[in-house]
Image 1: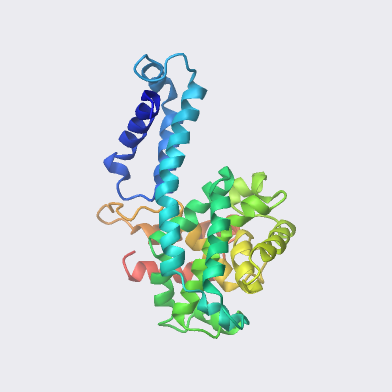
Image 2: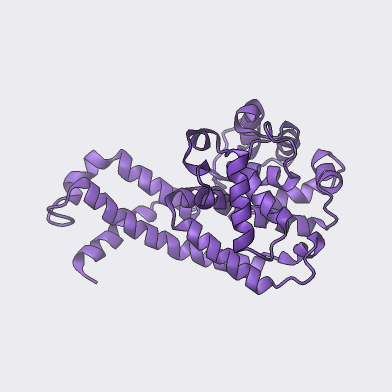
Length: 309
């Protein structure tokens, strides 16, 4: 390892060791550090361009070197987590309830990991993966679906009577987890969706773009039931414009969006709303803009409030 590589790694690890990042996921840390570099470019450049670091380099060159090393470090921890999660925590047996006679889990999981690898190596896909990754890391589907199944309210009705999921709550949890992992595929397979202004502002794509992604994904993941692929891909659609969206797709949207900036150690001031209740409160006001199912938002808001989340 040459001295420049050592300095690059040392500088990035110094930033990653910041106590304020301690409880964040790898992708959250990555985004925070990139934002820090961009915001403080003028202040950092004189030091980083000095003989002790990267002499004779302009800022863009220095930034490229630093972010390249940051992505390598992030990838190590992110890919290790996804490998453990997919092979040790994700149970695809639920696909048997959706018409798959034999469930070749190992093959299905390998294909899924390959897809996630491709997603994480595209800039847009990597940013899209943050919400899904965080939702899984902080176990958001588990805790909300657990409460949903204690009632006979709107979400459970939609799962059992509308989407017709004849499966246990554990199997529904695994379906939603899989849906979360498939959601970012729209960024790398869509011909136009991920690059549009609409996606950047609202987080939605047009139906025709989602249909293209769904067809391509069915070729890449041949053993996955259509309903699972639809759930992940169509979680990128607006429920306001597409009222026949699967219940699991609507849940996937909300968990991913909420988890995007999720901080489990956030300090709540006395008298203030808990973080998740606060997020759903904002989502209630903006449901039309982001294309949320308002009845689903209302129920999840109530769950968050009652449990102090």
